[in-house]
Image (cartoon, rainbow, N blue to C red; front, side, top):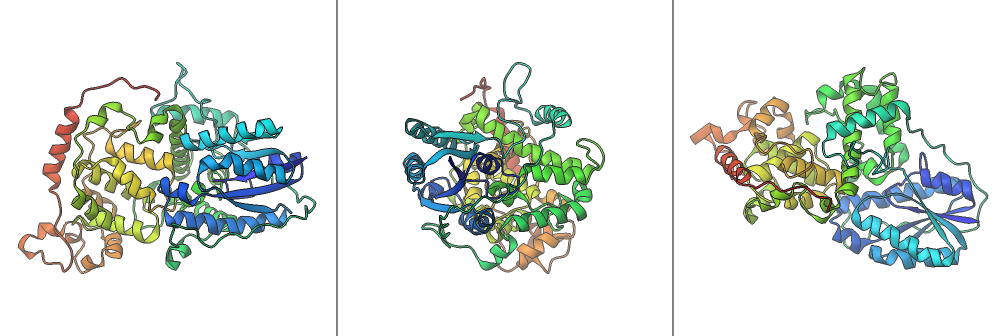
Amino acid sequence: MRQLIWFRTDLRVQDNTALAAAMAAGPTLAVYLLSPPQWLAHDDAPCKVDFWLRNLVELRQRLAALNVPLLIRLEPYWRDAPQVIAELCLQHAIDCVHLNEEYGIHESRRDRAVAASLKPLGISMRSHLDQLFFAPGSVLTQSGTYFQVYSQFRKVCYQRLHTSLPGLVPLPVAQAPLGIASDAVPVAVDGFAPPSASLRQLWPAGEAAAQERLALFAAERLSDYQDSRDYPAIPGTSQQSAYLAAGVISPRQCLHAALRGNQGEFDSGNPGAVSWINELLWREFYKHILVGYPRVSRHRAFRLETEALPWRDAPDDLAAWQQGRTGIPLVDAAMRQLLATGWMHNRLRMVVAMFLTKNLLIDWRAGERFFMRHLIDGDLAANNGGWQWSASTGTDAAPYFRIFNPISQSQKFDPDGRFIRTWVPELAALNKRDIHDPSAMGGLFGVADYPRPIVDLGHSRERVLQAFKSLQPLESSHV
């Protein structure tokens, strides 16, 4: 009986649970649904949609080697998926639809609706655990609730990984040709302007590119990751986030690469490998939070009492932050990196998020939305989790009194100003002392085309501390 694999955020053939299960069950076809209006509604970035399309081209070639045709269908909104999938199944006499699980509220609702529409037709649907090590709901506290603190979640995950390491799924052998032609992948879709050629070059598409990047990181940077990961001028990170978000590489492949570089150890051995595995588990943690506390998918604060914070309506300040014109060099450099590359160094994501929410007292949701609209690695769970951590509104959040000073962060993590000079060239002539805070030069401040700070860091810190101190605690709930 024929099988259908429905690709979503799992654009690869290697270590793909649903693809392997489908091909083991019978002759298999593949489908990908284009949903531009839905992507716009979800604030997906043009560079991310372009990355999906470029990876679909590579996926189509990989599937062709397995004699699996890739069909492309238009499904403007996810509510259209039940009809589109059902028609496709009837057209090609499909017995079972296979898919890898996704975890947002809308994604789960879509998949349940598709399963319900297929059932009366006698067509089954099988969902598979693929983008996580552990199914949501399987890593719980002793009282049976989802963890709210990452360190406790990580401890249980380590225990389980020690006893049951998720294996890699073998690449299926090629099936007999079906005589069905694959569809062409569009170069672009309505509503999403293609990014610059330079951005595309930073993020080459395909499994081979992702695995080459992973192998290079494991061989040359993993051992130093703990020490170099916080310095944005140093290429010390894995640069895997875009590939993980699109499913071009799997977390299992990343975990096995880290273990190979650390003699099989999870929580001992090389500190760089341990630190990177922790980052994989942070990603896991935030996806579990999506399921356990679905309010975070609804633009709600995890800590409900923080919804009473008196956020400022300050469109000019927000625009200055978005454009990298705040007068705080490290913040501006980071925002310009995002606009040019579709990516921002993780240390700087925290710095700019705290600056927006703490110093400017602007609602974290405005920052979360702007990031999603520009990040090539935009992921609801990770992006929401990171923003709420920085804003002190989320699970395992930074205490409200922990407020990064962007100038001291700059002095510590970009001591020579290399990163700032790259992205704020108007400051390139300043020495490594003045470049972090040109406004401290007093009357000598005369850097052409660079603004003075839009906020006083000290006064704004006191303002946000008072705002948090005035909050009344509320009991958390699973809504």
